[in-house]
Length: 267
Image 1 (spheres, helix red, strand yellow):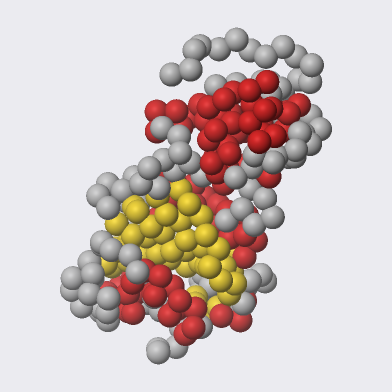
Image 2 (tube, rainbow, N blue to C red):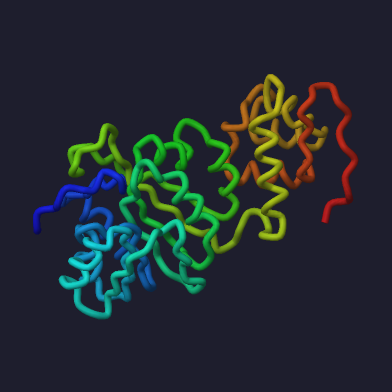
């Protein structure tokens, strides 16, 4: 494998050099189908083995010098595009995303990905703690809970800092995201559901019952699920969030002791 040139500090570049991690990422992509879009091609550590999968590949690279060099090394039909991924319009047709994301831009890039249509699977190398949080390890974060009805998140592997050059100050993690073929909440309710989750995570109370000002039906269902009244929002699973949203009709009440809001009949 050709030696990686040092990354440009202003672009936050930490290039992947570990063969085992490269094989893991490419293997995960190989288990998918459809065209591939790579985020941050760099010097081609992932681009070249991805090209050998024989699928249509579009590799995006912000550094015009690296993009030009890589274009001279990868034959058609692989295409190297010089662009800022955060301003890049992804295809609306089915495709697979893969990339080693700049650690300082991980959250912004994940948000861009989650809002983008078309892609079916994403295989991403991100900061270890970000990978754990997105996968719900130790409990769901608000961002994970907000997107769970439409995506599944899985933590695949930890990647040591020594797998990168220059070496970052933290480890990385391989995270996969898969678009659900049957969402747990309808797309038309996405904004209302996400606002519901935000209010729950920022609400007051000593547990899920108080935070949500849970209805009698919701409390009964939570008991049947084995969720104690003092459980925090992070304790709920993806299906549980979807069902609590349905039962509460998307209207948690923050103030303890307040009367539940009257809402429209359930659809």
